[in-house]
Image (cartoon, rainbow, N blue to C red):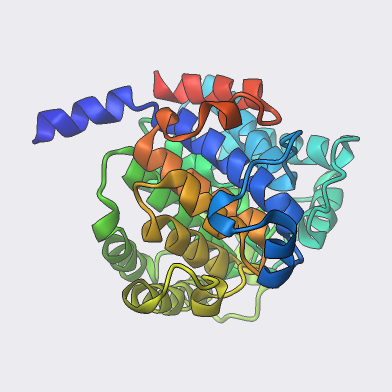
Length: 343
């Protein structure tokens, strides 16, 4: 059993599958964002028959995922991944994205405000939007879950640091950590059936753990009395969201809008759980999972990009229809990162 699972992990190209799936979900959800389900169905027809638009244009979700991936690659070219090596390159990539003429895909206000402030000499903690837990923190975190060879402390610290560069709210940090954890577990051959339980256990274990080596004095910009109280707020909100997800998996009809069960996805913990719900409703039908995620009343591109990251990590590069994966925007960049982390 162990040998089979190891072989599957090596050959399925989890990193490529996850990154391509994220972008496909992003492109599927881009035209449906800000629409309710009746409006979406009027445009697309039955949701199970939804097709990838042509051209398959993505949003800032994929652009910032690539920015994070490039930043991590640069950091690891310089040595072991830690906060001192990671913060600078990722910050530079985020600022470059902010100034790019291609940054015209309705990016979130938090990312724009924070990246404008990151384009300075100030400490990154002063740029972080401490009150924001928007889904921009975790819609881009998949690379942290895909990079091989990281310790649990490195993976958690890197996931939270990349979130904190823009979204400083503790729930944004915890949801990003959980999103990266889910991608990692699935990429390593973890079974979808046990995923929610594993994430809940991880959240309980992490509840009072403030990663000072990665976050520095970020907590002091909040009103919390201690770093432990600061981070616990985020984990508690994520635990409540995971509880709703566990209930939804027992009770949700796949034909109804998943947002009704786990939230509209504009905030980090809801993007995580609604993206997971769409994936877990159809764990072996990745295209159906993305169609369900894109046909939602909420932040459909972010929900679908997270669902795509989970499904691709689980099933690998072969999960996606060839006619979709071959024409997704930024395909060569996504494939390059995937090849680096699949090797």
